[in-house]
Image 1 (tube, helix red, strand yellow):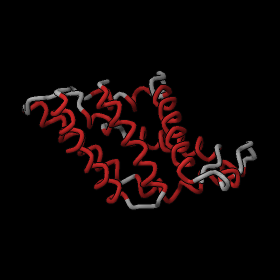
Image 2 (tube, helix red, strand yellow):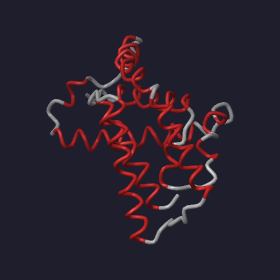
Image 3 (cartoon, one colour):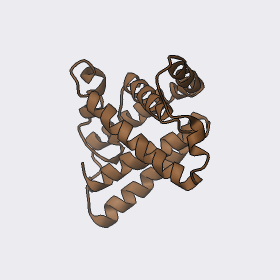
Image 4 (cartoon, one colour):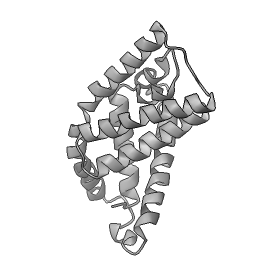
Length: 178
């Protein structure tokens, strides 16, 4: 991955988590996420990195990626409404976890920084797990992009989105993050 693609994945993941945690609807998440595309392309153009001529192949890959993004977006409201149920069920099982009260004395800015780092840690290891043979078929959609560009991070199968979401909710719940 280029530095810009790496940065985009981190920004998109962190912003997506913050937006979903705030309880915003998918359309708010979509507009915030889509707002970063022009910024990423401008930075790519200014730095001279990963500049692609606009070809029919590139147009198809961008269209397919956006289509997957918006189709998968239909799943997010369901996930948002079920996230607290997943966390409650996880805690009801009795698995040890940090109490949410542990974060009350920590400055909010530090909790946000820690949450972003924890989310990134979780997303990295969940992504690594998606390369296991049993999970690879749903992750292969992400790697099927013929033109790897900044928005390739959004090209995922709906089941991958659900898997990533559940793993991240479970990990962040285990940490007791508010």
